[in-house]
Image (cartoon, rainbow, N blue to C red; front, side):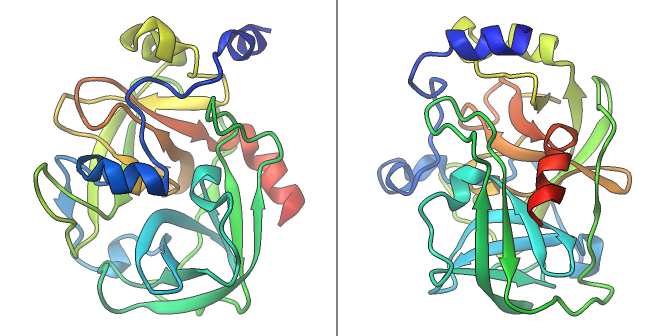
Amino acid sequence: MANQNLFMRAQLKRPEGVYFDDDDFNFNPEFQGRVVGGTSATSAAQFPYMASLRTSGNAHFCGATIIAARTVLSAAHCTVGRSTGGTRVVVGTHLRLSGGMSHAVNRIVNHPNYNANTIAFDVSIVQTSANFQGSNTVQSIAMGSAHVGGGVTAIVSGWGQTSHPGSAPNVLQWAALTTLTNADCRNRHTANNAQFVFDHKMCTFTRSGQGICMGDSGGPLVVGSNVVGIPSWVIACARGFPDVYDRVSSHRNWVISVM
């Protein structure tokens, strides 16, 4: 009921300070995605579950997580309106500009309750035409089924700018972040933005100057051997507000049902 009340109170606008659409990138280049305050991955084998969603021209636009032989988990705001023909999935590399295996896409499924205004149910799956070739650099990861509370160390990874002004790095970036309870997350946001921290979301915050940004959307937030979160929205970027993810355990049954 509490989650329903939050949803009903949410106004038909995004949380203030959130930018993530193509037009936002064009007009707000400083808000394009990055792991801020992160560390460079040493090899593709360090994050074998990491995938990159690319345009047909091979431009990275969002992250994703390998969860099955030809299925990746991502965010609906990354994939809504995108065609299968105009989307590729690249796996097996920690480099944005080279390496890896590029796969054609034959199916994109966005959560039926996704709301572009409130950013609710921000989850999707993308399926490739052929199976991934498993190796030490290409491996699926389990979807978390347990509720993750506050005070847990989680690992996020993604590509993009590492500072502003700056340029997107070639090497995958990662950071160890700390999860918050949803109540704590809401308290740390403005009253308006707290409305959008639904029960099916989860949050991280470690310090100002470290966190995620929009181009990291759709990628993995991992605890142990499970992906537990999907980067959804942030107050751009690493400026002292918690980062908000969709909670994988809340969507796990839906994902399994449409795979």
